[in-house]
Amino acid sequence: MKTILYIIQKEFKQIFRNKGMLPIIFVLPLLQLVILSNAATFEVKNIKFGHIDNDHTSTSRALVEKFNASTYFNVLTDFPSEALASSAMLKGEVDVVLEIPQYFERDLQNEKHNSLGVTINAIDGAAAGVMNVYVSQIIQRCNQQLKVDLFQISDKQVQPVNIETIPLFWYNETLNYKTFMVPGILVLLVTMITLFLSGMNIVREKEIGTLEQINVTPIKKSQFIIGKLFPFWVLGMGLLTIGLIIAKLIFDVPMVGSLPLMYVYTSIYILVVLGIGLFISNFTDTQQQAMFIAWFFTVIFILMSGLFTPIESMPEWAQIITEFNPIKYFVEVMRMVMLKGSGLMDILPQLLKTLLYALIMNGLAVWSYKKTN
Image 1 (cartoon, one colour):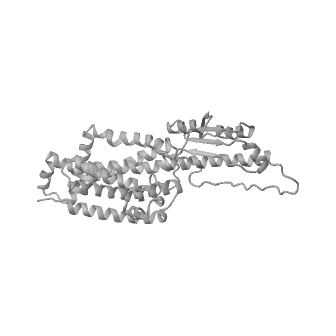
Image 2: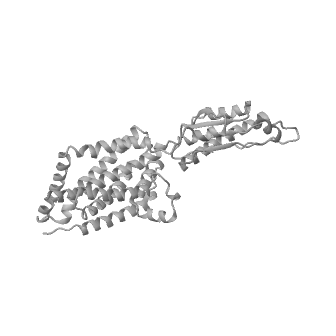
Image 3: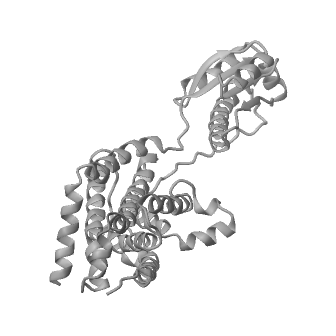
C-alpha cells in the first residue's frame, strides 16, 4: 500500500509540476464545453429567403408577410424572374425561393385550390429537411386563414372543422438544443482528456528512460499500474464535477436525476477509458504514436455514439457495432439521469455492460504490460 501511495504522490507531483499540461487538463476542456455547446446545434435559423411574386395581389403579399414575420426566415428580395432566383441560389445568396404563380388569388377563389413552387438549397440534406418543414408549416397556417377570408361557404355547405393539437414536450420543454448537447459534450471531454493523458503517460516514461529503471525494481505490476492510473481517474472525476457546474450555471441544463448515481457510473466508465489508454501505451514507443492511435479510435467512438446523430438512423450493421462502443452508454446514461431523472434500475443494462467492458480492457492492459524483474 505504501508503494502505491508513493507512486500516486509522484504522479500528482509530476502532473502539477508540468505547467504546460495544466491548461490542457483544466482550461481548454472548459472552453471547449462552452464553445462546442453553442456551436454544435442542428437548429436552422436566419434562413435566406427569396420569392417570385407573379400575382402581386393582397393574398400573395400576405403569404410573403407570413415568412417575414417568422423568426427563422430573413426575407431578402423579390426576384423578377426564375432565372435570377436560380442564379442567386447558385451563388449562395438565398437558401429558399418561393414562387407564387400568376392568378394565385383568383384561382383560390374560383377553383378553391392552387399550387406553390418551393426551391430549397439541399447541399446540406438535414438542414434542407428542416427548412422544408418550416415552409410547410407557414403555408399551412396561411392556408387556414385563407379558408376563412376567401372561401364563401353557402348555407348548404358544412363548415370545415379544424383540429387543433396541443403538444406536450417532456424532458426538454423549451426545445433548447443545448439541453440535449451539453451532457454529450461533457462525456466527450471527460473521455478525451483521460484517454489521451493515460495513453501518453507510460509512453512518456519510455521516452525519458525511467520505465526501464522502474521495471527492475521490486514493485509489483499491479501496484505500478494502479499508481500510474489513479491520478487520472481523480482528474476525470474532477473534470466531470467542473463540467456539471458549468452546465448548470451557464446553460441551465436541468439535473433531475441522482448526482451520486451519475458519479458511480462515471467512476466505472473512467476505468474503461484508462484501460484503453494503458492498452494503447503498451504497444507504442512515442507519445505521438499513442496520441494518433487514441485519436483514431476516439473519432470512431464519438461518431457512432449517438452524440451528434441518432443511432436509430444508422444502418443495421452500424447499430450492431455501437453495442461495443463505451461512449454510447455514457452518453445515454448522462442524458437519462440528467434530463429524465432515471434511476439505478433504468441504467442497469448500461452499467453492467460498462463494468464488463472495464474488466475486459483493464485485464487486457495488465496482461499486455511487460515488466521484467
